[in-house]
Image 1: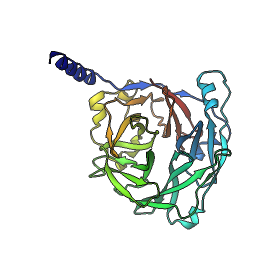
Image 2: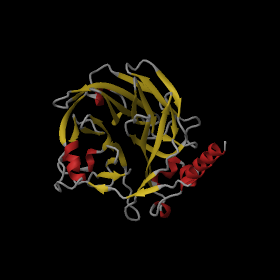
Image 3: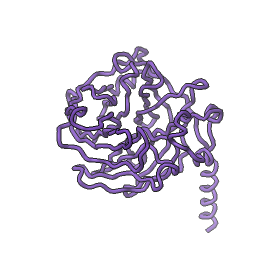
Image 4: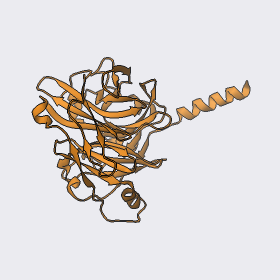
Length: 326
């Protein structure tokens, strides 16, 4: 009994002592079309050893980077810029076939299957569609055929907000809404969709301040990390309340001096419901006094850290970074 009590007390004190980590990103040089931030990278995911990056614009292409290219830069074997490969991204002409078509927002792979979310925007409402297709294992050409769309109803109307993260959980696709603050959504939930798109369930997710912009694949323990981002200019839109994670774990040196938030938070999937783990956030060391880097895409890099990419901001260049973490 004494041993059990001692172990329990050690566990309590170890959890209580956890603090937010603030980590400096290592910028990886890129060249070619993806370097231009007007490409607006909105999501990324691994297809085996190829990192696929999704621009939000309907332009007929995406980008791919081989893992060996990333390895050689992280390990400083090669100091030249990475040149992401343009790959074909074949879709119907959504601008003419989908009223309110705005952008592509998230991408996830399950074998050769690919799943993408499409943001729908009107003057007074928002919606989202889930599209399904496949990728060619050799050319990496992605094809989204017609008649593969499933409507995902947003939990609340917040301008320019939809489902920006997709996680594959066995034979279900989990979609996470971009804004889940308690001042915006009374009962936050994620959507769990079967592979054919004809069965949609609402599953709980914790209320959290700021934006959830993208998420990694789930690991063998059904845990994944998500980008949690805040630009102070969005205060009126997002209406953030008390940040429970900062209250619990504190904040790093640059974050404690700024209203900006650039961090990763860890979730776990339990029976398709989403819960926060007891891991403290990983903050991305802020740059300067005012520059906000709108991190919109994240993927794991082995068990060593994360890869991150920005969308349109800060201009004029897309930032591609490695965030080391063990």
